[in-house]
Length: 111
Picture 1 (cartoon, rainbow, N blue to C red):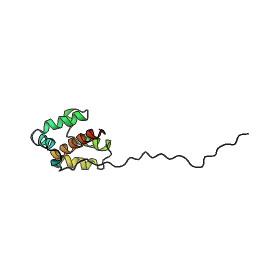
Picture 2 (cartoon, rainbow, N blue to C red):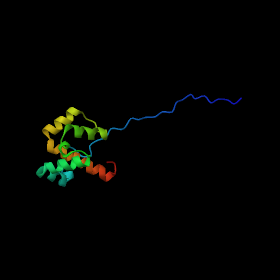
Picture 3 (cartoon, helix red, strand yellow):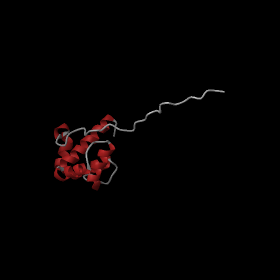
């Protein structure tokens, strides 16, 4: 009769992702002056660019839901309340940060 193999240790699998971070800070306009100028002089255009990048309607670019969706997709720490406050008090900077992050992730091939 053949001997049976006894398993004493189960294989481990970890589905935990590492926390991501924003590629640039909220007030880091000088890291991409083109995005900053677009945000300063034509915010609706930047809004549509961001929404288009994320395959959403142009009306969604500056929403809390859009920022939260992006943040959770890339496992960036934060909260919905934080997203709300950022958009309420730093709306243009928030949108510029999102666009800079999208551009950097496209360059890295992770978008």
